Image (cartoon, rainbow, N blue to C red; front, side):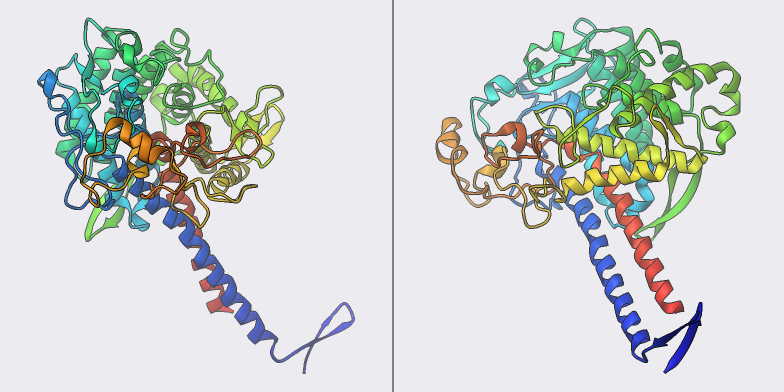
Length: 550
């Protein structure tokens, strides 16, 4: 036997130990390679979900086969083509405000993690999901000062339980214009189109330019003719009421236009209106389709970073990813041309943005985001998961920012490192995927135990392709809504509203606060899943190299 001496103790190493170590290494690599596929699968499923929510004439490459064409006459009564876009959730209304926020978040995820999405093989699907929304916005923006904001209305829609393919409810379209303004929806749609213009800049420059033109016009419209959209479109109230008003959306749009154009006057707009519009006076503990202040504050903190181009490979061609690179700690908050003029205001934006990050981490002395006993961030009872997925995304990108600049987060309870921030963000994602007291995956179709009775008209009724017989308004309620069986169609990739404050979840179709999914729940997860998948791939590669060298 071989002998080794350590501090006078003779260690006997059995001949078979190296073989056992090799076997254990192989097992570890296998386990790691198996786990890395989890986040890759989750990423693929989230992008499938957007195909389930499509309205309009479905394309030949539609992968969700239980859906069919719908809403083919949208806008006809008003003499405008409004075919396309997304249904927001489990009903058949096209609400413009949450649809635009969905596209903004999808685009932001691709901007930050485009390379990772490419490596996961989902880049084309991500761009298709974005373009399905932006194509609709181009149609809906029929004049520089006219935006069609909604098709259908929740009141009549909720009287019926029908597949979108069978809709008999009102498809009246509603618009905002100079006489009936809607700065909030104009601002959010401008943000979505500006962000998407960055995404398509290299792959489709003509389309990118078109989106940017619409974004600039919409911002000018929203800023010149100010008002809340739901004050002029009454049917939006009670469904997507703009509680926060329109000032956050105008700041949000201006920042995305700054990112898309690098024109100083958009940044100056954000700085000039920082106090008047609440950009640096509001400290918030949520970020959502309605409340954009935290997003504004986070982007303002990072808005003046340098941008470099790094090539990556897509289906035989090289495109460029816009990778944010934060040059060094001396230029964290501003490029040289803004350093003297804007430092103080950018610091104020940063302070408010970091309040939110600290609140999620429970690092503020007083005001923090509540948590369930199982560790899930908890903002409110109805569709809480939207706040969780948004928080996971913002914490992830801010962690990356701090790593790139060599900084720490300064909370009231002490300094926090970027790895701790990212670890907490990952814990929220893992909770979503099943690491929770009920062992339920709240991402539908992922894992073995996921919601079976999602509150969703199309998913809960037999597919139109299997049964083309017309299903009437009340017939859907009588025959399908109250069934105790699982939905006949799996709404793969949907993130449902999730558990209550005690981590409890009741999987019933009528329990819409917990079982309804929305496009803006899932959208922020695309970028986060891509990053987590990439990290797992790198971990497996490291283990393989380590074993090869041993």
